[in-house]
Length: 139
Image 1 (tube, rainbow, N blue to C red):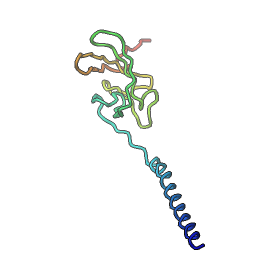
Image 2: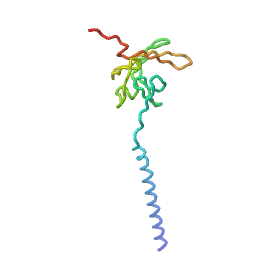
Image 3: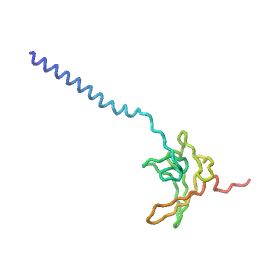
Image 4: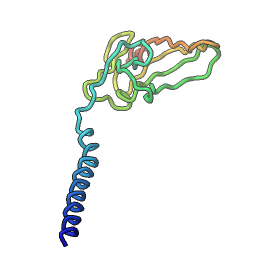
């Protein structure tokens, strides 16, 4: 009878050890999610991978929203912004025109020319924003 009692005690300790191990294993991912969010990195507009409107450094899966119009070698392009500034600007994100340096409204966009260069990367030249590029209406 002593042998069966010792066997039960050993099984009980193994069971408790497995429960403690499982508790630590399943609660570990929850602790990682409670880290503070990463701060948004800002860069210089005009460098690759940086939004030309808000200056946010984009991740690999983030893209700038644009509208491209038909043409030959150079095409007109409207640049609306990245996921951080279009359609709604994130907190502490300032939308600015890189040409006139004035604040760009939420419905504003940039005018640009896209130059297609076979064998090389395309080149984008920003001309201005909807505020500084469009003619003012006279009353």
